[in-house]
Length: 285
Image (cartoon, rainbow, N blue to C red; front, side, top):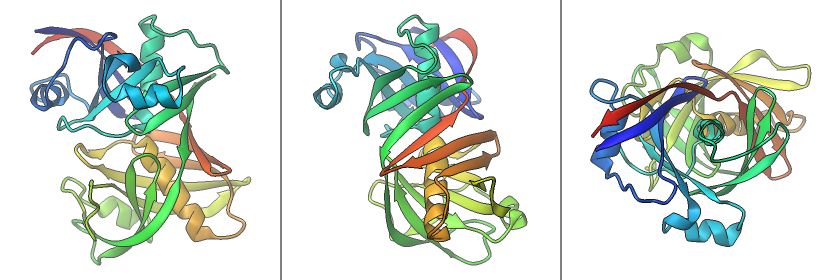
């Protein structure tokens, strides 16, 4: 089986994308993991299939929520497991739909995209895309243990369409010392797992009315990645919660692969950043 694919990334969070508009190509978890394998496959933090919402079972709920959500982002982690949403991935997905001629979208225009986490509104910007991640939830606390973290730390659970636990660290040295090659241990264990973000505030935290933080992340099913869009949103929301009254609604989040923007408007959180398509190819499975 030969598959035509495109490799893309959002601040270093990289994906293998392929088009299957009518849902004719069903890859199992092993085949998806083979595509994402960095040694024997194309390599990526995840795999994204471009498929019409009407062509797969999950699309029924999407179209009931918004009949205009023609396209569904069928996203799987690097191990082949499905995920609800991917904030960097949906921006790259938008760029891919445009490049394949599957979508027309001018700067400033918005399109509804289906995901397992529900419909997301994606807006094209002059330098990338902004996605409305929808309503967020700052939930309870957990305890997090990680390799080369001297003492277990409290973490704040944050939901932005997928689950996260955010941990505040003291300084850059502590953040740099972490070994995230192994998944952090979260107690109590989240029923569906969680991405875990470790955050250090900038000094000063707020500059020009914008909050600034630095972050590293371990993504469930993928390991440490250079960036995580929903994780950046979760990290900003957690820091905003810890900062209390007077905390800004606009944030810049620095990740190993670059920087993304997060803003809060009412009960919704928005993520903005670049989307790059790197190369095309054909792979045999």
